[in-house]
Length: 451
Image 1 (tube, rainbow, N blue to C red):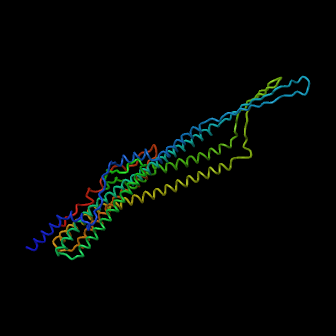
Image 2: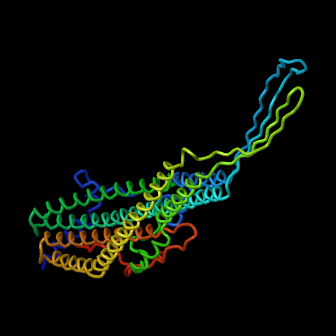
Image 3: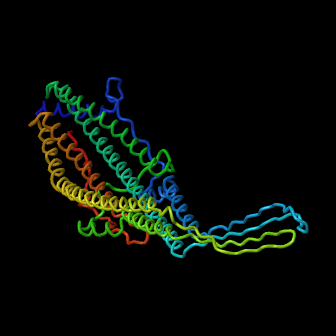
């Protein structure tokens, strides 16, 4: 009994002197503490900021402005032509006056109403395609911002877990050092604890670097408007609720911005075929002219008609037909690809959701219980440090798998939401309500105290 009390007193004294021992030159260097964030942003603010500062949004808007100007060009009337000729009349016979003989002519080309309507309709389809392209870019930008946002949350969660792992390893190292010094355990336990402590330090440093890399990527997606030092408000454990695959497929077919763009391009190409065929009609223009001679004036008015005799526009019509066929096949191919992407994203969502549920409700909790049992057994000398470290490693791996599964679940939901990107004038996709996937739990539980 006296010997056990002496061991307990020595262990307590060693733990009380641990800060002074850690400050000594022979101690392992402690990890650098993360600097506090100056500002904290949530996801809606980041999405709004990206839409207002990203240069790609300005380029997409410029494309829409150009398509709007194309409608004005399609509605414009042909400009008139004015001819002014100057000459002199020299009489060779007696009585014929000589003098200047200028001539003036005015030519106005006319448009067929059907041709004007076709040009305006083609420009209108081009505008709708540009608007759908802008919406597709915005949806893609939102998806990239969300992915980067949850990537930062993932790395920060891994950093927090690494910090707690390092704190636990420091406690294990201190305990092993005390036990080795008093003779309760062989020296290999201290060597093993020091090795695991160095590995935890390395993991923490890697986690800190990954957090910085993820934040840099997020700043790039937002457009550089974020300060160098910032924090994020949110949780990695919440994901949008996704409806059934059949509902998603119907919603995508009706409102996907990329499909809407390709449909408008197909319709524009078909209108282009009709327009090229309409150019086979004779071109008509009104011509009015006057010739002023020294003795008299001659005025004329009539029609100028271009007869499509040699050029029946077979080449432009064939080219427009081929472009329409190309637009149709591209639309069909993209519809098939998007359906496959939607099914793959939905299956990935189901798989990762099942993984998150299994990890949260069973595996992580069992690993926590196993670590508690191993800690108690190690404290009372029933198990060695290897069993304790193995239990701690199992918990760390399970926790890492949970963090990765939660991130993959968010990515799958983001991909589905991107495929549901609504074109202008269509209803929004039903991937909106946010709810917890499972009851919230701590990703990095409080480490058991081995002392």
